[in-house]
Length: 159
Image 1 (tube, rainbow, N blue to C red):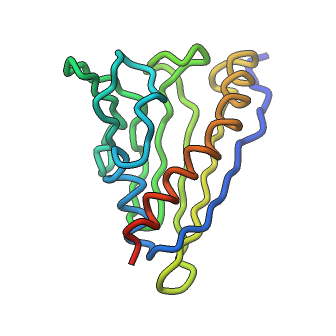
Image 2 (cartoon, rainbow, N blue to C red):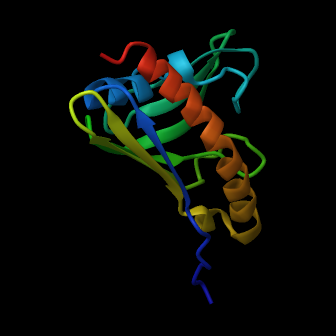
Image 3 (cartoon, one colour):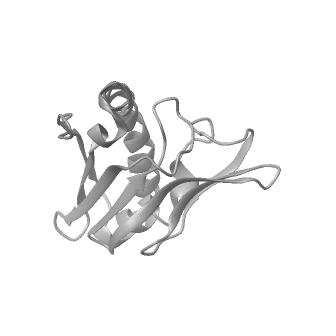
């Protein structure tokens, strides 16, 4: 039997008091401004965390010694409304290009000066049952605080 048992997705939403284009830019091009350098999988200490804002672009951690560690690869790019990336981290929080859980982030305008952001992290079953369940538990607890940092940064300059 090669069928994978589904593991429930992690679904988080936030409301940002900022226009959709600004919210998208802060989440993607502005990742260094809000992602904590303490939340990394590569070499420490981390100098910056960034996203190459394009189809095929990477989420990278750059250590102070210049070492680049890829975290994810963008597989769908529809600014300012949506992007999807392959999360290439294993359950031991190490970079692993074979990992294929996905993070799907959608931005919906709520009037001219607000944005609804929906994040779905899913396809944990591609990691295997035990590793997938472990990753799901970790990101379910981690995304809320990280999205809080994003909201703070987006609202800091959101008009």
